[in-house]
Length: 345
Image (cartoon, rainbow, N blue to C red; front, side, top):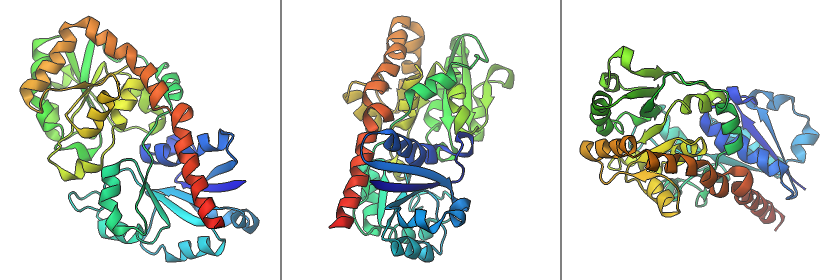
């Protein structure tokens, strides 16, 4: 039996952010449920001190996502004293080589050189981190829990009637949304479309419509995020491909949209284009210009049959191709098993 212990800031969904949910909680939950000879549990980081030594001594792998501090050596030494290894995960560029995120980029680069394994969500992110790590980072693509998202979203009531389009995300998208701001403003004027702005918005996005004609939804715990996302008919998944910070980003936003029957209208960004090539119902704009974005939005407004086709195909495609329980758990289980095989040899 392989034993894994994962650390998160909290063990309830409303205590986790998206990365901790997708990269620690969800994979470990499914790995634990599968018939694979692996037992996985999650505790909050502040509860580690209270864990009995007997439990720690039987743990083979310790896992955490984006949880680190500068003086990590004693923590790693303790883990190694039990004959175990530490796996750190990140699904974004935290080196700060291209963009400040938390002001700790140099610390992070040192830490990923000390942990035993680093897992990431994309190959470009593995390329970015490889010069700093002991071994090449392991790529484990993001998968979602489609049934859970749909269950949460089913409790949502629409805030506004009629067609809704807009953007959703964190402050790191500040530059990504410049290309869609003006066409979204035009669409809202030319058609009966309500813009939705969800998450952390740059000030310029608030000019897409007057306050009474737009919907602003602030950041929320991931546990209720599906309720927010279900307010959209289409999400503008705009990514500035010239910004090297985005090189390592994944296609998780499009997966979340499709899982809920929300249409993702996407930039010509490699992860989104790979989804389209795999048959996913994501709409790729012809080029990243305001004119192309306007035409893409307009096409879904004018062609209801096309809109319905994309909307209806999303949940089934995600369930069959990028759902953690159906087709994601096996990748994580094989990775963890390979670690123990190496420890035994």
